[in-house]
Image 1 (tube, rainbow, N blue to C red):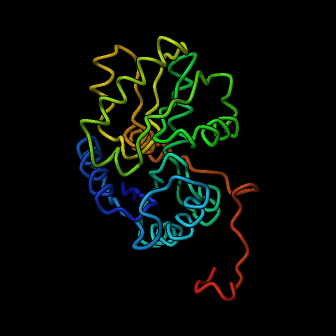
Image 2: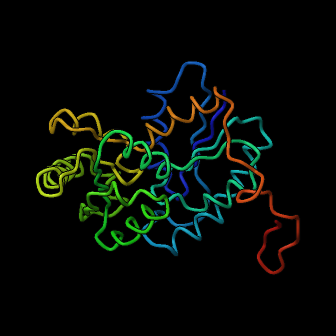
Length: 241
């Protein structure tokens, strides 16, 4: 099978980090392409960033549909443009946030999301409600690091994850920790060993779930909510819908 993993920000460094980690766990028969748009925000840390990143990312979703891919993974914990991506795609599209939050709710009664910045806490709480999982949310806790720092400084990131996750377990009753940023890919196993709790690496978990969904012939419904949008021209945007 062929899977395209899209890092919606334009950071080539983070894209290479994702590729390295996911290549280690993919199935031998999975052909993996890990890509990012050539333009757009270098990191996604606001709703504004997410909207701009989504517009830059959608042509890659279209490309996957025309080049024989079986699925697309949007590898950002904001799932930017996820609904639009599913509308324009006839192949499976999944986001690492939607998949990992549902898996977290399966694995334990309460989960905590670790997010890079404190200002993103309301956004994560909103997105949990959007997926109707608020009854399973123990807390959202910030690392106090930017997205770029979580990817570029592994030692500091792991130390902060351990510190904040420990508080989530002891003070919030979390049974599962969700690493709420694609820049934290590859850190879950060590944190899980040290704390003795379940830790979800969204990008890795989503890849394995996606492989299984492709095998099972599953993809998003196109009847209504994700129905293909009507063809039209877009004026003054430098793009064509």
